[in-house]
Length: 279
Image (cartoon, rainbow, N blue to C red):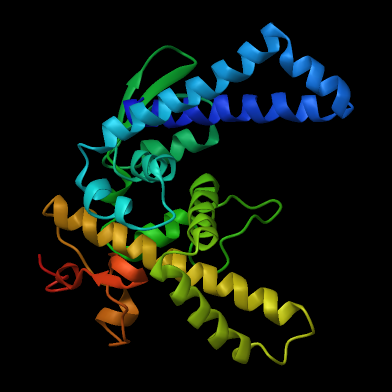
């Protein structure tokens, strides 16, 4: 497993443990909780948990300082911190190295991939090495599909999903954190898109139209962020890059990729969409 990916997964493990610990304390009456927290052993547990999380964040930051996608793009979007940046880069930009059971239903599909390297460990499992997701994603639509950012990407009973549900959740989490921070130009984009879709869905039953407008606006923000990451990565790696079909072929308008500048104004990265379809 890639070092950054290991740091991210370990951080989430410790975070879940800390949250579970405090939830357990919250079940006690306030008086008992206060006494318990002051006891040496429980006080040390809390401090050690927080210390470990901070150590992992510092280790992630050290790794990210070597990554141009972080230093030039993700770190300059307000609301995307070290952990979410590390999560995005670990899943999208790093080689995927894992073991899988030979009986796993996905293993047969993996064996058909021309870029998959497979090493048999024993009769029960194999090691699989895949290139980074963004190396495989030739077009933006490839990334959208993998992340579940296209229509009808949802679980249906009895049907095998065609996207990565964990990464779909990650993009929604990133968009949510950006909106909660309220400092990024992405918040302005969200408000504009939501207002537009509120008008489109105004005849939908009461309550549903507002929710539908919110979810559609979130998806628009997520797709724009995904496109920015795709174009920036391709530019950094000097790989051919393309604009989405509606923009490239149908000549729809495009909001250029951006990072957050001063006073909440966007700093556009227009060079990323110049000659985007170079071969």
